[in-house]
Image (cartoon, rainbow, N blue to C red; front, side):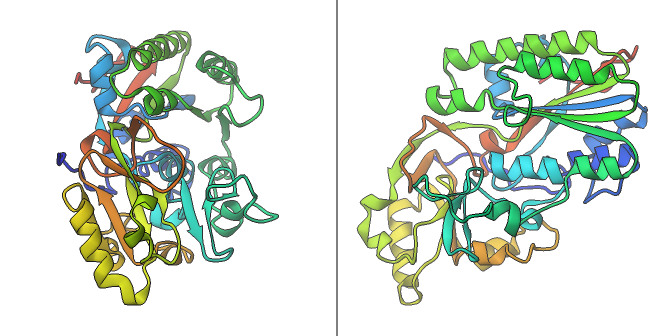
Length: 377
């Protein structure tokens, strides 16, 4: 079944959020700011904190949390993920202020021409294996970027990050919030970026409607509200990198006629796949793919996808075009096409509203007008 589609808007997406924060610290922005957030930053706060809860899209929020609860009652508005609506692309945009075409961290797996391999980006491993793609970190070396934290430090303010993957490796959202509390007590003006990897993992394993997801969201909401109650002179922003959609699946390798058309396996994500198709097989590939999947995927020649500015409107990274291949398949329904061993109940990456729409939740901590501009879903 086809879904409502939300095509990326690079004036109103998560790539804009860090540029609003850079402006607030008088640091050079990397792109356009987010008007939805800018109005809150007209007031100067000693601390600006962003907590990104992986996978907590608008639809997930609506399904599980009460309208009168802390998150929905402090909702400043709804905006968008980037394309692809996935953690690699979106969190890199949060960390850099760049659009995906500018930073080229595009999906869970990316093709890197310099090593001629599909690489699992966050692990630097060859697709489908635990083998390192090179004796150096390919994504960080080939597609480096200057972080928002570095830009703020250069502008003379302090910037910090807390995630499960950086020291001191917090093991719960409560521990993340404890770090934030500690940092916010320091007297200097500062930015703190915090990432937590839930509810994404639970959504993948259990599905969007699962009681496990509901329980986790309620606990996270409670934890963040307790943090907000403790803070002074702080603008606390809670958001997500993408949403989720429950999905059926097909396995590409079960269609040998299609695989025979390919130079290599696709990369990116099961919801958005890039194809390197053999020159003499393009017509057959298009016909066969559309016959099999045309009711739930939009197949575009890559140049047509680029003309639509799906990956962004900024200047293309020098590596960007070579990573993409010559066709892009975009899920328009609830089907995912896997080319690896994972099979999830719920997924993300494409342009359905469930995947693309994310909340901007704002707590003005220690301010009398804490709810200024907030609305309810």
